[in-house]
Length: 380
Image (cartoon, rainbow, N blue to C red; front, side, top):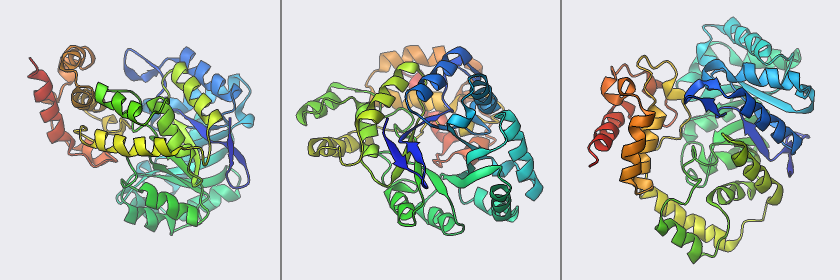
């Protein structure tokens, strides 16, 4: 494993994100604990020392599970633990402390190495300020419950810079991959934070898995054209590891096989290792993907939290995009009814709008769900 300086600490350049553990019966609240624990231990034993979770992950189950694994295996104080305060749930200043105390209990620890104000944007940030989030962060650092404070971000570059400039942050976390150079904070935000000596943690390196596979003969021909032998996953991670501004890249691996591959890549490549032919391939891949994606959903799962009809929005968009990216109508027609129950399909949506309020990508979810459902159901 390669390591990077992160505020005078050696942090593995690959971190384990605890949002996409394997689950049972496609139920995000039912973590497959046996397999997920093996993943955590494998990551630890192979040099990963940054573990990232959050209050809402796996419908509130991730923190408790991670805390149990760290305690049972006696590795809590041997790793760097990060979690996130859902500031939008705090009704007032004291509510921020209440959430922190609950999270410390969930994770069975008396301190966090890294603590983020979760998913900040133009709507959540003013609420956090109203609840005096600055005083909150100052207090929890001073009393030792948190060593370093930061924020995770989903919005445009203007808001990102406003937040960056508002406080003496220890670090931040942004969505970034080779398809998102000009999306949300983007490469401009990455470099802006770095210019202020603020370490940046990267989430969604594979854009919710969208950049992980060879999807058509045409895509394979691009790899062949540039004589690149890497897999799409290796290429996407190598692109990020090549950047000196990147402090840590989170893998949202859902299987031990994915995790093994990602750790191998993080152990092999670093800054300056991206070759010219690989850069040319990345340019062609951007054009390839851009021409095919219908809905820019990353599968972050924020939209499904609180959906009264329990509609698996991310799954539906995955099949919808997959129809075009993978060029396989037959597979889409077979898999859609198997994974999307009839009583949870878009035609059961009551259009309450909660999903759109939580969507970091600002997708017109209600409209796009109807289009996706109608198109998939009309496949002959």
